[in-house]
Length: 328
Image (cartoon, rainbow, N blue to C red; front, top):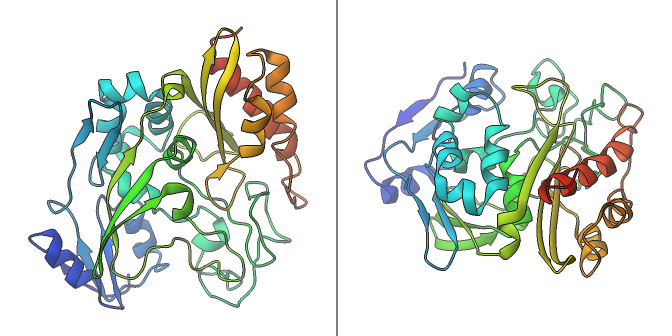
């Protein structure tokens, strides 16, 4: 493991001051960071511990919104009755993430900032990885790319974003509250993660020293009829081949509002507004779901190993919408 100093600040202001150093990084639950440190994928000179510094409260407001402190544990959020009742897609996405042991340690803020599970990024013996070694190439392009992205890719990177709950939060138009050396700001979660372009090593819009302090989910009638479906190679502790977070507001048999986002297919959590537009105003029935799902693959670029995802994407959306609506 690369040598580093571990700082334990007593408050958020001290954490921000320490985190502003060019060679510093933050650690909270550490479930992803520890593996990256062990494999020397990340090599900070200073590690700033956030335990006891950040808010861990889970608060449902009277207006129907939800606030999640960045240090709230994934398991606590999933078990919260206000979350499971008003935002079931969030609870379901969390329960389908990692393992129970990991969820007991991992924080919501850390989950949103986890790094890709691309095996070439995670293997320091592979030189060609533009995320790890900018300008070195992308071994996945012509390598083992079955699990890789088909949306938001570039000639420099096709790595898939790994978070499940980020997909649910994108579907619900959540907002991330951020603190940094230059003050506080709010970032729509759909804008938090960057597409790779020609700088895949820059994964988020956060500046050096900035950290997530909370996630705020606005109220929406569609949230109560929401669902997260994850398709993967094995039942537990596996990342998505495809996943869908959907939410529907239906009145008198007509879809007033639809929210659809996908995971396992994009270089960031992927909002499918073209699918939503094809659902809105239509009858709440399977034929509508199927017609709308045809739009999911627009703009997709496949490689040799992941062409199957195109059909799987459509089927995942249809099944998620069907399950959200309680249809047979």
